Length: 112
Image 1: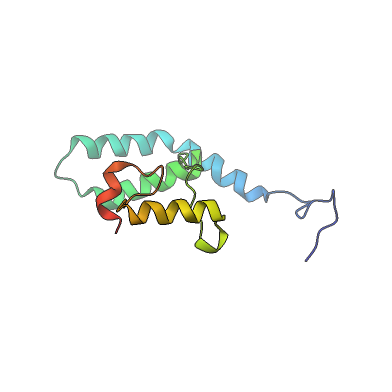
Image 2 (image 1 turned 120 degrees about the vertical axis):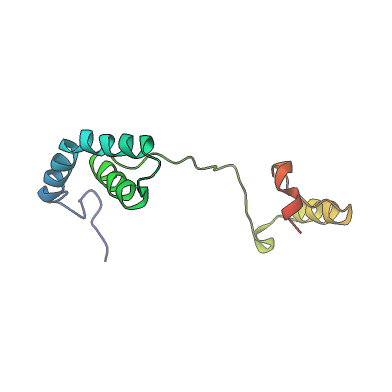
């Protein structure tokens, strides 16, 4: 399916029901935080189900935390490498180097 340039694929926008769920969930934020606080203070309480519910409520009300993505990692197949990159890779492999350029040293023992 092709969309015309300059025209939205969803002209009606986000469904209104989403706003209602978010509004309701945000009203329960204090309860969710109180539940998490109780779990933190009560070492005998089974936290799994309650934490899961509190987390789900917070996620729906406030969104999930942002995650960091490293865009500097270059995982290229051999077919996509330039001749210079292939020469460099072969030289490093022949020299017994196990890590890729830019790979943290702490991971060198898991690369074979």
